[in-house]
Length: 362
Image (tube, rainbow, N blue to C red; front, side, top):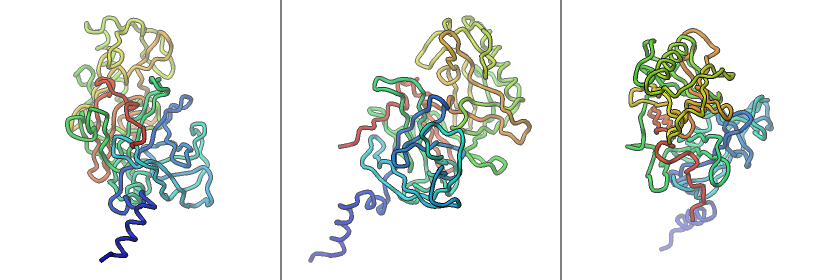
């Protein structure tokens, strides 16, 4: 005998595929991520195709214009995904606040906070789509690809995150390491604790642990003064060693202190061949290679892409990892397990954040 309730469910699923999948557990959502050339900030087209600034330290979604000054809802959109391709468009209602914002990339209509809070975009997608409170983020560089500008990707709701013929990069052997996410003085955002910082496997003078923040809203990693000085000194010593005799110092180019004649630096798949910097984390080293350490400031000059943190004292983290050092590696932020997973610098294995296939699945 035909069950009218079952027929009703089937008809609802046919008329609203996204609503059906959400009700039964849902699918993760995927969006493209682009880097703004003027500000070096990262955006995703989440508000009716208009971009929102992605902020790893942000605790909420904030729009520049909305119907209420104290808080309201807005419709955001992305695509459901199987981890390898977009599947179909999904729109969902999100709680937002409204405020004027300065320094946004051109065309951006607000900020999508991605931090570990109940009102972040990540948490709201988890609730509305009934998926994991987890973000897989792959920030693009500002380089060109064979198809145009470099494009990164963000997947909300857990894995998988699949590169063609390479498998899932959110877990297992495709991760270079993991680290527990820790709190820091009640501040929002994601933090990890490094037991040491090393240059060419030699630890810098300071003893750890070092609390390190992840940031998508500063372009280059900033180190507290008591960490920055010994780090630069260690880099100088390594750069003057027998393995790097080709490194020739040139005049500084603001905001960087250590700059080199790039015409003498060997090019590799890892970027320029320069001393390797490692953040020693509990589950593996977060390695900063030439592709993420050396900034090409002009045709003949590349500079070590670290700056000194303006904040001083132990009230500030030891370092803030900026966008340039996070680019072209997948970060997996699991808010339930309080864990960061990360891949190696993807260029080292012939991939990049632009390798994700944004062709709509058939």
